[in-house]
Length: 257
View: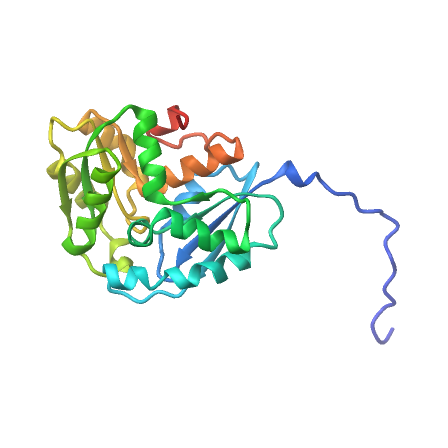
């Protein structure tokens, strides 16, 4: 027998699952992000939802100036998600960039390519998270440089949260933020805690803190919210879904107000 066989049309007529059988969520990441996809896999129930990711160019160090430079890239990144049918939400997964650009600017840029799709940002989701938890006074821990942390503390204060204490690890490259050891994150969170604060926000989608939340809540005796946890919590509610079994943290026990 020589040559390729003739291709025949199958006698089976293919049917299709309903489009809504899988809830589709979009994420826009920095090119250097090493953590957001892993955290999404910990929380999003794969049997009911799918996360579709695109990335934008980014050059370290993580400073207010370099973060603002991502703004003009958002519309093109969102356009790569536009062909995905029925998106329930799109998250721009960079906390510090969202502070610099602003939620309104991010929503406008993404809306040019994906009109009508809800837009989530980590700081916006964190504010909703603390409202849902009834927390009004927080401690803030970031892996950033001081000049990148200060605008975040100011943003939360302007939004009505009292910031009891703000501390940073002084790291300038987000790829290094993704390599901070678990024990050091726990120790830094304990060091940043103040007894009069009702909760702790650990900023940065690069920092691998999500899996430490149950331990931190036990040690501190108060709710702990991280950037990726808050964003994923908000996206799941846009999709009408519960997190994967075992996703830890008091936040997953409440709904947006």
